[in-house]
Length: 281
Ligand SMILES: C[S@@+](CC[C@H](N)C(=O)[O-])C[C@H]1O[C@@H](n2cnc3c(N)ncnc32)[C@H](O)[C@@H]1O
Image (cartoon, rainbow, N blue to C red; front, side, top):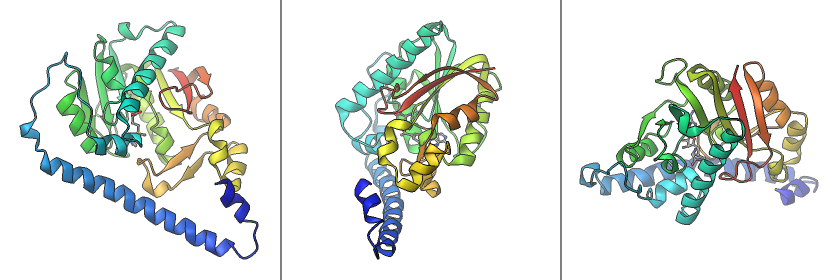
């Protein structure tokens, strides 16, 4: 990106750079479709009825490589396990700092749980565990392999299938990082609706640490406190990337949430994302 920023100043290169960026957008679209097809293909070769039913206490298996790459951006198995554990531990410790004990919470929702990278590490928590995601294939895997959690699919923009005031704790690890502006608002409203009064929400977001990744125009927007969104047409996939300046996050949250904590780069299971912990007013 730095080289690209410099090339913008070379006379005559702008049209070429614009073509390059258009090609990159097409590549992202194609890649997103290839990932979906590759996993569909894997499912055809591995029908659900052949899989043994897991027992609640079993260590869950690793999701297939294709699914890990699709959801987590890497198929590195050691990273999948260690980073998921870090995210789960980070949230437990952060809640503890605010006098909230996860083990005393009765209902926890992992919004955008993907293939359960974090959820799997709470399997011994007495809380009733829920996960939801817009990716039906990831949820299918969770439903088949994470019997301790109730996992459901939601649409990219829809109400959730939960009653008002259902959850003590909701986490959304690297989900708002892939949503364009209108969906940010929609999902904040919806998570607010399903949180109990006084319930808490953890968001992990791309913040200042990602500034070097932004183009100069994007940086100007970011520095002016505006949300920066790349490839909004691929909303909900990892190809769409949203960058949240802290001022913009505060403006989005404060009308209905109390900000309990803001930890720059504090989402240690989703580095180098910021962690925001807020309470429903
Ligand atoms: C980068 S992955 C993170 C997955 C998981 N939270 C983790 O940390 O491993 C982003 C996840 O958000 C999900 N997602 C994106 N938009 C969503 C939406 N509107 N509703 C539910 N899930 C969504 C994606 O399908 C994907 O599984």
